[in-house]
Image 1 (cartoon, rainbow, N blue to C red):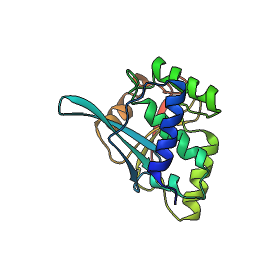
Image 2 (image 1 turned 90 degrees about the horizontal axis):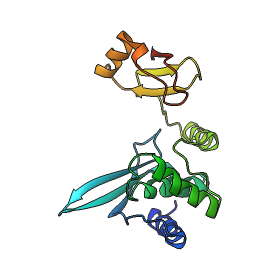
Image 3 (image 1 turned 180 degrees about the vertical axis):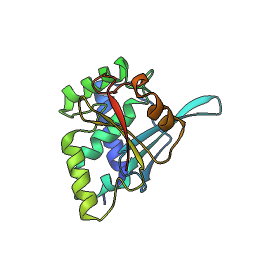
Length: 182
């Protein structure tokens, strides 16, 4: 198993070298329950200041997973600590492009097909199910992507069922969604 703190420190050194104005997180954590999400940056207000906490999926620390996937995830989450970067807007994309050009990473707002494939193979090998907890998915009939997943029939699921025309695909922008019960 890789040491999260060591890899995180290497990533922060890379950001320092090219002048990315990140805020050093108060701590780095692993999340053994995360199956679909690779990382999470949480912003909190502590003693009059904003602080950040970064979580990564624990499977990314396994030696079988290419270290680039872990670095990509850490760098993505570290960008969220930059001013005005908690979303995936133009500032986020500006810093992601800086890092990608400087070091050859592929930081984006979506998981790459290669990373998805690696994760699925790893989960299958370790007999870990990724989708068993989700009961509903929203599928775009235009681009055929799974737009979102839900564990229970919440108000959002009910609204999508009643008025699917009010919702649009986050990927292609079309109003062509359907709700699927698994």
